[in-house]
Length: 71
Image (tube, rainbow, N blue to C red):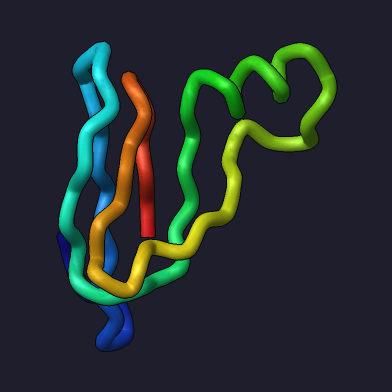
């Protein structure tokens, strides 16, 4: 995690073959790239492998297997 213009930034990667829950601070918008997003992009069904998400109000972000998230 780092700060840019007073705003927290983070990069989280799930290097396991199972979905995991990660707690981050606040309900922030983020971007996620996971297997499904990559497959949609590779097949031409999506313009980008990234999808916008909003972290739950409790700060829990569920990352699928081998997914990465940035904010």
